[in-house]
Length: 284
Length: 262
Image 1 (cartoon, chains in turn purple, yellow):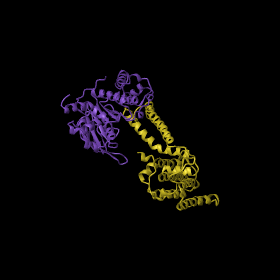
Image 2 (cartoon, helix red, strand yellow):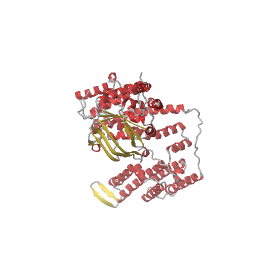
Image 3 (cartoon, chains in turn green, purple):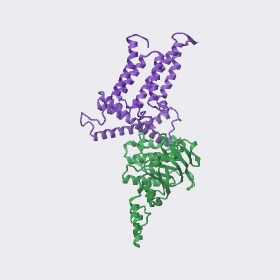
């Protein structure tokens, strides 16, 4: 494992100040977003299709530049930095792994990013090995990425970003199209990256994954953040969720339905539900 | 972005409503006419007429400039270069060693530039006023085999999709530190591979999916395919076709039958 550079855990690493963005065609995708991501946070960005999640994320590594407002990365204005500069701090794994895999082996694929940043020799090997290990791709180093299944390809695409050792990792819908087993393997690796101190920004429609992993949830609707709170608070607020066209995980919904029988409304996992039900009945 | 890949812009002008077969005929004849005409003044007149059409179909200036940007540069290049390499005729305006700039040389340059302008603009008007599916429908109606027409339609349809794909791949690689502006020729060609390889693989996958989707919607089940919207010539289309043919026939008749220089 590569020790991350010294960083104050609560320090703001990415900040957006009143960011507005309008696409060339005139679509107003962001209508004034204020958002601060701190070191080590696990933030889920949720919201309906077209609510501005991906547009927002693309501002954090400079792929899009705000029409107005300011983006700060590591305390510096992003406006003066290229995407390549920003990629040292903010890693971005795209939704479709096939949009970035082009090398003949997983190892070569994973080394492309750090080589672009100028790393070579033992430092390069260390980063590549670390990334391959972190994403559970140990046996696949010499295989062509395109011969792997979707779940594995997605892990390769994330390893290809991790090897650049970013402090912030943006994952755009990483669980799409994966079965429950693949999601579990993937999310365990991501959780480990978070425990190492990396901030994770997860764009997703998968509320179960949000409930299990995120410690902060940002709800977007119509180009604005409509709710920014811990996951528990978000899933208890059915009204705002409905406005953002979101449905909490089934177990939270069940808890809401059973609220009149004394079950708490802020249940997020089946374990919590069982525990709370026992409490409501007066102990085991 | 994708709006600029498909130059067609929906509208309700007489050219938008015209049968695509008539428009294709007009474009062919006007293109031929640009070669038949050899006098600068006549080509400028034709160019003026074509620009009038551009105004009548309410083409936006920015879109037209975008579409014809390269043509305009090419025209400027012709106007500058032609006189330098065409020393024919008198009077001579300037002479420097082997380079001789003459008035006829300049006129020839302007003529060639006007011809290029006519050709490009007339095709642009066709694409600007005709949806791709109507172009394909017209070709099929004129006897092109349906499967070839469909292939053409799908290629045109996927042009914007492919350009969107390229953008997405470029974003993904830039997020991995790729910098198109930096590096030597080797790094740069490697960068192109990084963009083209995923784009081609994804495009091939897309192609495969489309063919499966077509088959599962009974593509090729019957030879005599029916259509939801059939092309039908209206009286205005016949009038337009006649006007186009007259505009074409007069100079051709003058030049090749009466032997008058036009």
